[in-house]
Image (cartoon, rainbow, N blue to C red; front, side, top):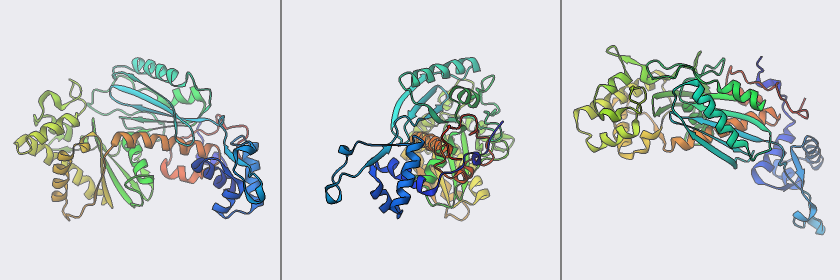
Length: 402
């Protein structure tokens, strides 16, 4: 059974403002918070009382505060250490990594394990080992968990989808069920480009951009679209797989494979399933005028331009390991600008795609946790994750807002 975000009723606005101020600014007095948010003293006092009652915040000892008016020491409030933490998992081709954060975004622990996508049993064991290592010294409850994966994710089931001809392992791992059962908390699984786009549109370079088309150049070439803050994922989560777009009876990935730009270095694995953009970019930059380099850049640029023509974005966001190579990025963006019919495409770059993925999954986990606690608007979550089954009912805190 699944529950929509509205299953967790939001707290009064005063409570949300009070908690948010402490979360972002550290220990604070009621008077300070009231002044910052134009709350009356009684309203701020009531908010503090409710948050204290629910165990969301704690009152600090009087001697922790500085003297206020008339020599009195104001009472300070801070987040409760026992409230809980956030879990993030990033699944790559050869590695699983995970981290725990507090609600301020400070990292509490991290762990990683090397693995290859050979079988679901191997990955399941690796995931369990990873999580065991991550939480062994942490006694806090996990409020929410998020997972970034290479594969597309079905928006109705949160299960990983198959990518044809990508050397896919026999049975995709069910991250959603495992983490839900282990931690009894809301879990969100999504493709990496969606986490990048989430981060860049909310906190990064694409803030306040109405329509953003994100292109992630990594093992595959994937795209994501955000319109006024809403991430579009398609009916089955398979939208944006640009490397599967066909021309002359061959997919883009197949065309790139047969160009022979980098021979055995073109792909991460011998089966030819995953592109190695980092190696490819290095060798194209070494000989950019070669026929194979020119054809590679042309095929890639044309596919990106076609996606931009269809979506007509306010900005094209490029991300992934390939764009960290400045010379390759310059060659690619110049060609994209030339091929775009109106020559006015606004191209922006998320230069650290790995950072954007990490920040995206952390931000998503934080938002899930805040909605679960009643301290964020469920509508905001609905904009980011429309139609996703988010189970807030399985482990709602006994002191949640009703």
